[in-house]
Image (cartoon, rainbow, N blue to C red; front, top):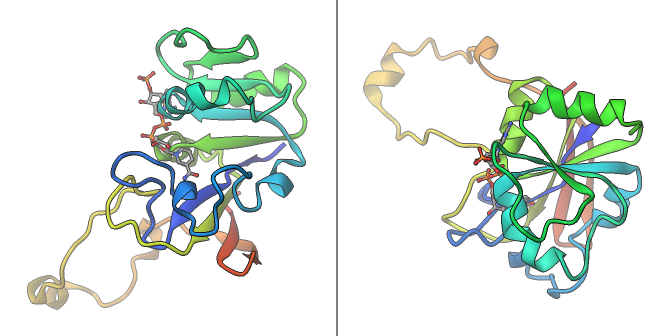
Length: 197
Ligand SMILES: NC(=O)c1ccc[n+]([C@@H]2O[C@H](COP(=O)([O-])OP(=O)(O)OC[C@H]3O[C@@H](n4cnc5c(N)ncnc54)[C@H](OP(=O)(O)O)[C@@H]3O)[C@@H](O)[C@H]2O)c1
């Protein structure tokens, strides 16, 4: 079982525009109806889906009429009861990443788990060392403001800081990963998969 993502990300690193609309919807080739780029292949070996509460609450009104995950069990990371209208195959999980992974394994899931997002849920899996594959699709759009895949602390060049710097990367302070695959999708986007574990 691998825990893996398939996130649509703008070229400037955002997963949504400022109003919270997913970057997928800003893909200039998106027709508003079909699955996100690369999604059908990605879902082939997915046996369960985990997501953060914000992502679930935002998506539920659209998903109710055309449920995107078939019979796969869904786990929503949340500390509160689900909103009205959540289908019975959707259950909450409030014990964090390890608890939800253990519970899915115990329930017999052997296929991969899609970690749908959003960024908070993904970060918690990275922090727990439980994300196996970070798959992103880099979309040809600059959104300029919105929710970043990873929070960044933007800085400007400072002569003072530079003069004090060792001018060498402090590699032990950053997280690195291994490139597993990359592929052009429909001539406009790039699907990149990084292996964490
Ligand atoms: N572009 C894409 O591919 C893509 C994919 C997915 C989502 N998105 C976008 O991402 C946005 C939401 O992302 P987000 O990061 O703000 O929220 P999120 O990860 O969807 O949900 C965060 C909430 O989940 C609950 N939670 C419980 N345990 C958690 C844990 N271990 N880790 C993380 N959350 C936990 C918390 O809610 P409580 O404590 O209140 O219960 C927390 O506030 C939406 O706008 C959505 O459209 C984009």
